[in-house]
Image (tube, rainbow, N blue to C red):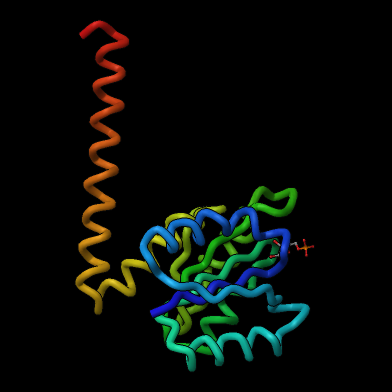
Length: 163
Ligand code: RP5
């Protein structure tokens, strides 16, 4: 299963790169496009319909400013939509965060941190892993690797402090 990634502008791409890297690390395929809820609403609709037909298992939708894109994507599909608020205005991403998180009842969007693309990818992998035991094992291994990193840091701090 693939993850479909949609961003409101090419200026959002640097924020989304960690999501693509993380999905690649898990061996999850992606379909990526730029489409805007405000500037190209028909394209958003077409991309969502095609991604669903192509077997996407989850969407990552990223946008800045008055970020309607994740909610609009969610309006076109019952697949889970993971929203990434992008910091692209003088409000530091708070505008996008609130626009994405404050969805009215009925059409939810799972909202990540501002610029939280890596977690969006991990959440998407978790969604796909509900039906994929091999992916579940990869997630478990990823967590073991993170825990090992924390232990390395603890040892480094202890050595620095002469403990
Ligand atoms: C949003 O407006 C985009 O998602 C982007 O974060 C922001 C600025 O877009 P551009 O003016 O760079 O195209 O729709």
